Length: 246
Image 1 (cartoon, rainbow, N blue to C red):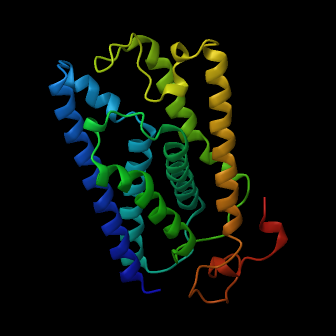
Image 2: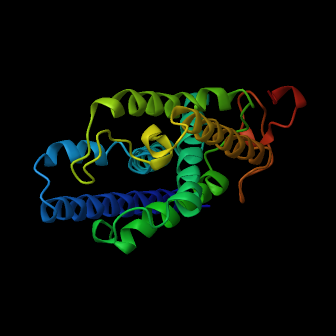
Image 3: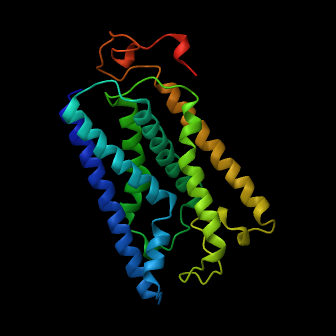
């Protein structure tokens, strides 16, 4: 697979995500104005604390950096840190797609959503990120223990969200507290934080399952990569020793 083709595809995917997020933000601001929300800056902050926006913005960074790396250095063995970052972003975006389509579809007011942008962030972008993980030429076999590192980002997001929620109201819904998703709001359930804890555990179990499946896919080379090299200095698609698995 020609590096320029892959790099161009990554830049195009990043541009699509940026356009979708920008469109959703502008539409949300318009919606907030129509319902009389005064604290627009606060609602903009709320917007960017959605896991969807955070994971897709991270995907933009991965696409752009990955494209630049390919254009500057060609196909070479990526660092473990870079692969971990890609694993984190891919897992997050795929989980965002699954969560939205299984749990959250229809929970956002239609007037606050642009259909093409919503589909781009929850269907198209996750598919592109996943394809890039599976087919991108700059890949390597990673250890199972990498999943633990990949969990750090969603844990930080959850901690910030749960600590902020009790002290932040929602002008759009007149709720006393603000949580980006209903399953994180203890006021939404009779059992409060107990039910939230169940959803949180399910979220992290799902994240781990998705990450483990992605790690498993690195056992095979991307299409078109050569089957020669060493596990240390050569192309990583030649890493087949059992000892390389965590």
